[in-house]
Every structure is written in C-alpha cells, then in structure tokens.
Image 1 (tube, rainbow, N blue to C red):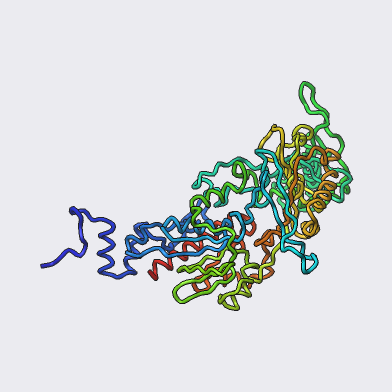
Image 2: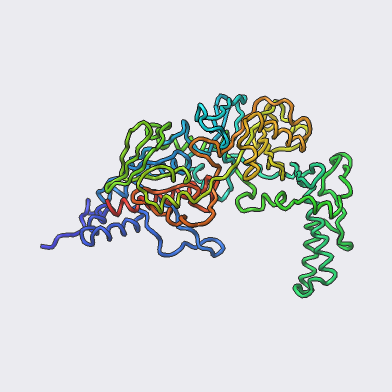
Length: 550
C-alpha cells in the first residue's frame, strides 16, 4: 500500500509538514531552498528587484527568525560580540531576534562607543596626549566634569542622520522619536581667512552665484560657447542664469539685490537692502568653495534628522532590546583565539569565555593589537586603516543670544579657521539655556587641539569664535566640555581612512569563526548607517553559515 510522503494534519497541508516531506525526498538542500521560497530563511536573490527610475534595488534585508531553526530541527548558536558600539549592539539585537545566545563585551563603562551624548553629571576622561612624558603616574589623562543644566545635552559624536539612511529605519523599529536637524541655515555665518569680517551665508551665496552667473552669461552672449551650444541652448542658459544669479536680463550684470539680505527687514515699510556687493575679486578671494557646498553632498542634504533628547537614544534603545544581562561593560578583551569548534576570548583579569562564533566590532587599529591566532594577513589588514582626529567643544550658555540677537535658529557657521564649524542647537528653541557646539574640527585642525587640556581648548575655541560673534561669544557660559576622539580610551580615533583598499575585501570575510563589523568596513565610514549596514551583512552571513552547518 502506498503511503502519502507529505504528512497532513486534519487533511490540511501545513508549512512544517511540507518542509518535512521535501526534506525526506530531496535532502537538506531542497528543504533549505523551500524555506527561502516560503520566506522562512534568508536566501540570495537570483535577480535584482526593479527600483523606481530603472535602477536595481539592493536585496532587501531579511532578519533571522526563530522559525529558521524550528522548521529544521536545529538550534541558534552562541556568539560573543566584541564592542558595544552601534555595530556591536546591532549585531546582538538582530541575532537575538532568532534566539542566538549573544554576549556583548565592552571595555568602556558605557555602551555606544562613538555615539556619545553628554549631560550634567557625566564625566569624560581622556588618555594622556601622545607627547606626554613616559613613566607618567597614571594611564589616564584629564577628567572633565560635565555641569550642564537639566535638559541640555551635547552630542559629542554623531549628531545627524540623512533621510535615506538605514538609521532612520531602526529609529522607527525601536520607537526612537525624531526631530529635524537643521544642517544649513542661510542666517548663519561664513568666515574665512580671506575675509575681513563674517557675512551671512545667504549674502555669501548670493554674491558668489551672482558673479558666476554674470561671467557665464556674458561669455555665452559674446559667443564664447557657440561651439558647444545651439541658439536655443544659449537662450535657455541665459534664462537660467538670470534667475540663478539674479542678474539683469539685458545688462547680464550682477548688482546685488534682496537675496543678499536686509539692514532693515521689510515690514510696514519696504526694508533696507544691504546694498552694493563687494567686487568680484574680493568674492573670489574668500575661498568659498567648501563653505557653499557643505549641503550639496548626498550625505549632508536637508532635511536631516536627530533623535529627540540626544543621539544616544538609539544605542540605549538597542541595549534595552539586547538586555542588560547580555552586556558586560568594563570588560577589556586581551586575546581572541579560533578553536576548531568555536572561539575563545580572554578578558582582563584572566577570565575566559567561549562561544560558537565571535563578531569583532572594535576599531580596527585596536583590534590589530589584540593577541590571538587570526593570522598574519588578517592582522596586517586590520592595521591598514589609519585612525583620524576629530574634536568637539560643547558650550552651554545661560541665554540663547544667537536666537535673540542674531536671529539664527539651528544650522552652522562655516569657517576655514581651526575650529571648523560652529553648530547652533536644533532643539530647545526660545528656552532659557542652550548649547552651542563651539567647534567641530577634523584632521589637522583637530590635531592642534588634541594635546591641549580642556581649559586651553576652551580658550582657543572662544578666541576663534569671537571672530564671528564678537565679545558676547565668551559671556554667560554656564558649562563647557570638549572631546578629542584620538584620546578617548578604547576608541583612539574619530573614524578611519583607508590609505589603500588592501585588506578591505579580506576583512569582509570571517577569519575562521571570527567575523568583523563596523562602519570602517563600508563606504559610509563615520556614519551610524555604516555600522548598521555592516552589522546586517555580518548577521546575514553568520546566520546562513549556522543554518548550513547546523
């Protein structure tokens, strides 16, 4: 008598019974493929998904699920995650959805890594400067006490999110409320070494666009572009330039106008415009290229967003989902060893932890210095990225003078001084107090501030800021704190630069049972989105491996 190879329950074919039958007939490979068709296991697509505009959309991320194991009779693996920054927490969060036994090890006393938000009562301890005398009595440098008032916070690390970034998807999933981050503001200022005084961003932009339009329009009208343009092209270009640069339709000359701003704003009366613009030579001498294109980059374009109450809302929400009992802070990793059946991680104090797999989400330049048996090629690859400098200064004022006196609500003043940018807060409008980012500098500018104690950073930052805002910039300061990311313990850098891509591909793959994750392994270095994207990739690959081998 023939038997039905596909068991039924109450004469109804279930997904479980279907998979059991397919597995019996075709083996594990056929069963796994069927799981993918049923949406029960992540499977690579054979063809890209069409996207709006004809471009190929990326393969949608499919988080691991408990059903991936239950339908195969397998079990989730145990995973040690090294580092409780965004990448590490995201890995533990995503793996936890499928029941993986994850333990996160973090050397610092707080989660978040570079996603650091400071409030009153916090402390910031830095490493000694690189040029400190050898044999110093302590391994720690200066400790700052944060004295900000209630409701004031300082995003010392990342502070903004572009609307296309996966970070916003996690904010939605985790229930993190958002508000607009004002990335650019026409009322903020621009100051370069080629200028005698700061000007409003709108004024600098109007003058630059106006003169560029005048030059191109006159060249076009004189026939200089006849070899490139038809008569219809010339007419369209001249029409565009007349609007883009606010130049005369007949004279083709830039003479200023209301775009530059007003000395007396219009109201009952027509207002008083700023008047005649500076000469073309003076405008060109200002070196405005970077100042006027900050928001032109894909990553910087408005609108941008920030979590309500501080950027650390994201890591706190992730940590809550992972669970406090799975996160061990104050635990420094001292050795990582691949074993035939798992990974062994030793920590300071001599303890040893074992798991089936490990995800190393530490900064690569620090991971390269941890002993183990990852291999010489892996060590060399980890040592390739160069850690960079960046610094921020938070200034809490007792009066929001930038709103009251300057009419600046959010955004940033752009400079080529060593302070880089001055950021005005995008929250707490019309409140009693407010926090200005007195400098946000990177590269060589940050390296000037790195070795200084906080009081010297503050003095220098205020001196530069007074060149923009005058003496009021140094008055009524209620609290201040500065961070040099090259001197942050267990981080020692703001982000990294790959001098060559040698090793980049190698680290996309696991070294035995050790996987690597972080923004430094993406093309979104320095963004939280890079950390999330890397975590998703690692989680997917690790999960595939567990399903295949389990």
